Amino acid sequence: MAFDLTVKKRLHYFDLDLSLSCDDGRMLVLIGPSGGGKTTLVRMVAGLTMPDEGRIDFHEESWFDSSRGINLPTRKRRIGYVFQEYTLFPHLNLYDNAAFAAVDRKEVDGLLELFGIAHLRKRKPHLVSGGERQRCALCQAIARRPRMLLLDEPFSALDVVTRRGLREELKALKNNLTFPILYVTHDIGEALFLADEILPIVEGQIDRGWMQRTITRQPATGNPARATREPRLALAY
Amino acid sequence: MDFLSLYVTLKLALVATILLLLIAAPIAYVLAYAHFPGKALFEALIYLPIALPPTVIGFYLILAMGPKGAVGRAWGLLTGGSLLFTFLGIVAASVLYSIPFAVQPIKAAFLKIDPRLLENASVLGLSRFAAFVRVILPNSVGGMAAASILVFLHTIGAFGVLLMVGGSVPGVTKVASIAVYEAVEAMDYRAAGWMSLCFIPISYAFLLLVNRLNGDAKHGV
Image 1: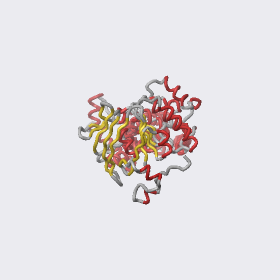
Image 2: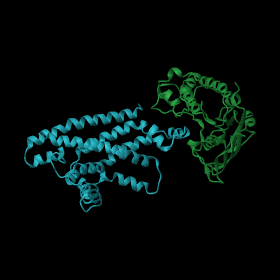
Image 3: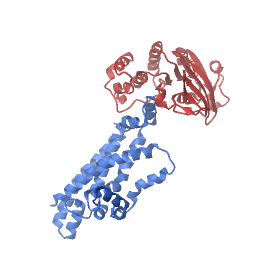
Image 4: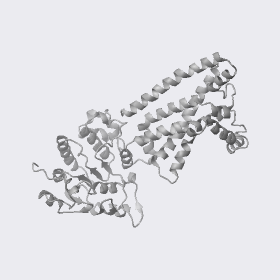
């Protein structure tokens, strides 16, 4: 596989203990209740959080290996990472944001065009809508020609209509991307729509029965406070 | 009226402000982002000049810059001259005297920057230094401006520390605040009055500017 990961980390409420892999051009969707360790996992892939032990391999390259003391710094992993919100640079307009780390600035205009925000290129981030900001964040991530794309609930702060539009654009875009994509969401509809493979994560572990139990409305955990925060499959989907 | 001392005051304030911005930005960066043992002690040391009488600072500066002090001796070896009673001497004194007023607003501006922006900068391949130049500095313009004005005003207002380190050499170290004091000593109330009057509009205008900058920062513009 292009990307392989096996990590352990002691967290506040549970121990994260996960193993997964993803191939080039595939989208692996991590789903599960909030607070289950999905974001922590993505941050480990990015190098923003360090696992206690384990290894992260990308093709022949080792990004993290606790037994050999390897921890490649974030800036050298050459990844694209779209966060939930608020990561565009407020002092730059949308064009300069998208071109911030672009390998080839000539590509930027095409990307802005592709995501339908070319007419907003001179605007600062606080003068455009949340959906337009996230489109720009996607342009920024792709313009640096990443080796892997991490999307951590990129559309969850948006309204339903914008969210549906964007996930369709993303699905169309995916066919042209040749690297592994990790997508975090707690929205089952979104996961079913986008994923090549779905991996449910509950309290730091892979829990393949979780989707089934969610549909039949059994709580994922015995802890009722956590169970109320679980996503449910919308009957209208 | 003693225009020469007003000129020395403004020149000193300008030079000290520029130097302090260059010195304070890295210190503020360390205080805002670095973690090391003894950081609290270091931070308190930086802010110490606020809490000391200017004459005490001046006294230690005389010891350090004098011919027997470490700084004075090193300076003497390098240039053959003395730091005491020179313009450079009062520049150094002003920098030390005003350093808390430069570091504090810049540090506050750095801390206001969303840490996710810095994470995104490293995801996008920026080194710490590149992130400082391309992300932190451009998003701290308000804090840097506030720091410049505070330092400028604080240097204009300096008296004790400059009198001790610089004496009162006309055209070199005799600043306006010292000129007012000397005019009063000489019972020349007319000269003292005009000089004093000069301070009020300058200082008032700059304070209005500081408040405006702080207000702008609050509204996120």
